[in-house]
Image 1 (tube, helix red, strand yellow):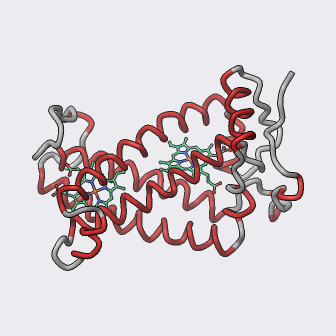
Image 2 (cartoon, helix red, strand yellow; image 1 turned 135 degrees about the vertical axis):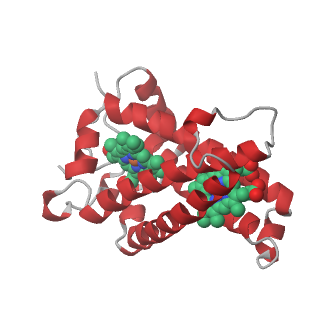
Length: 211
Ligand code: HEM
Ligand code: HEM
């Protein structure tokens, strides 16, 4: 028996424009974001290695930039790609109603039912245009983590000019921890997310060619 992702039929996704499951702007911003995130994470690890917050370092082989200054150059270059692309995605997500249609509401009962179905291999993936409650929660969560990492990044980049922002995080040192923990959350998301994309390959196809 398979359990269809629980959702309120009145909130069902509108018919996708041009028959695409994910419109072109979602696909482009999704993959640009994946590239920008890869550059930000690996350069961030090299920056971290110059002055670790915790008693470990990231292996040199998986970091970008070679040394602190090189990594900072990568971080500040890819930052523009990440932020401009992210603003386009969030603005269109709000303006087109996509976030409202696809990411909310998230009900606790649906979350429990869908999580149980997922863990027992009974979650249906028949309709790729509708996200189940677990997907909704993870996607909303990673979008929020993206906002937190950008704001905390700005706070540690310009701690004097943006003092109020740094103060919001509890000061420069705390903002560094927030920035690091948001990175850890995003990396955790990506691991699960990429595994799921390959477990359900047609979802990967839909995010690439739209069908
Ligand atoms: C607007 C976006 C961003 C800005 C302005 C920014 C800025 C910065 C700055 C200034 C540092 C150096 C902190 C220090 O001197 O100790 C840093 C470190 C770091 N960044 Fe970012 N960052 C941004 C986005 C990201 C993203 C998207 C990721 C990964 C998902 C990331 C991961 C890291 C990591 C892991 C470090 C090292 C943490 C530490 O040891 O302090 N950053 N970032
Ligand atoms: C190689 C890396 C990646 C792969 C293979 C991948 C794959 C996918 C696939 C197949 C979907 C369609 C989802 C579905 O039907 O459930 C999707 C959606 C999504 N992915 Fe990724 N992804 C990757 C990287 C990322 C990264 C780095 C992030 C953010 C940090 C991210 C955030 C999202 C979000 C928020 C959605 C929902 C988008 C929307 O519907 O508006 N992905 N991804």
